[in-house]
Length: 505
Image 1 (tube, rainbow, N blue to C red):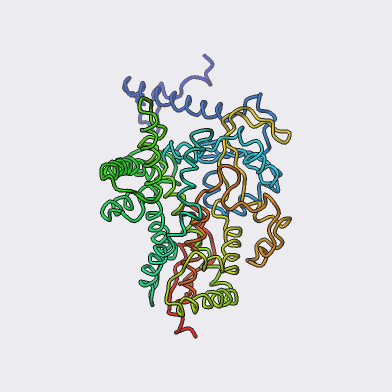
Image 2 (cartoon, rainbow, N blue to C red; image 1 turned 45 degrees about the vertical axis):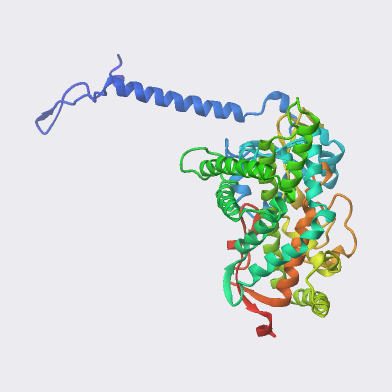
């Protein structure tokens, strides 16, 4: 062996006449084995992630873009950056179609009205509705949002039957009572707008789903479990003890059990149930009569999943929109006064006739309706929707692999100056003229558009009528900034101070 390559500490050496005998570090064999296995496992995991992250050669025509970090992708960027910046930065860099990776899924994002129409309408059969697996588990795999074909068509007809204008006209007085009860607690107080709007929207969703004959104790339990469910909705899908997702999945199982007990209780009572639950139970009863020897076309599990899904859709999105409306009206005092004049004109007629609001009254609120439209555009609560390619799809010169998510970016389309001049300006007057086709999609488009859009607009109009004629509000702290909760909302849920309107005049 070459001297320079000899181990330097195998021989004793001296220093100032003292001789030292170095000791070899002895590591027990079992510990060496553990270290070896750990390092090998780590190496294999990293190798697997790297191989998984490489794009197969067959996918070399994928759209441009960045997949971000392994597994995490660009999820953290999406949910920490201003959503307008996140999408516009990538659109400018890559164009109207680009790839990314969010919530554990490889995705293709599209941001032109024409492409959105292809995915949602004209070639919708190639793109099944879907969410990331974690969200499907939380909402329920049998919810109509995740299906297409016969099952989707039948369930959507039942849901639409519960939320079409003819069905919700009779709910105006009930919704009005919910609004008045909540506003009665607002006098001279400080509050978190988003949380208050969630109370309102949840109570409206409950009567819409369960009808008038709701059991208060059951509803309180459902509300508590739903709040646990909500906290894990936008968390990383790690089903480990202590994580928000694990807690949400536990709440989901308990909520499913509670709903099934309620379904059975309603069925055994023999009473005519109202709301969505009544429609679904009637449909199942008719199935049983017509198909005694066959599986029912809608099961209790499917009923429970669709109830949870509808409450989710009716609750968070509406609460978020109302929170933004209060911010925009606060930031535009002249607009607030114009809306108030419109609502006071209606209020004077109600006082003269000694009655409450009716459906017809809500049809005579053009300015307030335009404020809602502009809020839906500007805030774009649904920044995008999820679809999944059911096969390899050729799309605008690129290949979208089977199983990849496809996300039409409503927010990017709504904020395009080509369709909405000065898109960052809050201007309800722009809706005095109908927008161009496929450029305004706050409730989606095609067969999977939101069936509860009319109910959402109705409860907003009712709430704004009583709010603007009764109170004024002042936003506290930093009024700018966006956070997710799970949908984009003003920072910290828009804390504000509320005062009776008379004190401000």
